[in-house]
Length: 100
Image 1 (cartoon, rainbow, N blue to C red):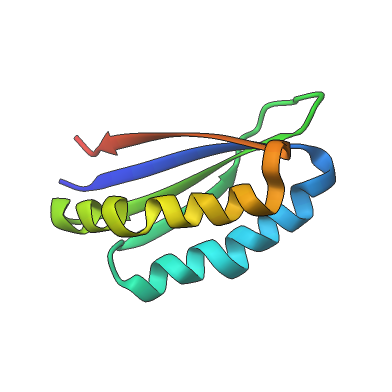
Image 2: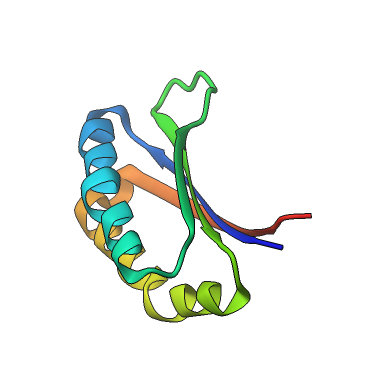
């Protein structure tokens, strides 16, 4: 059984490029260097929206302890950096999923 931490982001079009770059060059490499998740999936949500674009970032954890470490040590730091970079031009919400 794996745990998936999904964060859905909605970003204004003017910051889309910078946001995607931050995910690819900062967020994902940071998570990978910590060695807590076994897979990362970053996707664009295919919905036509007038005021921006939505993305899904899924971090996959093979054991509950690795998930707990991420939540305790890294989650707030990573979201804080993105919020600091993009402010109100980026909205997000997260859900935890369990593979069944």
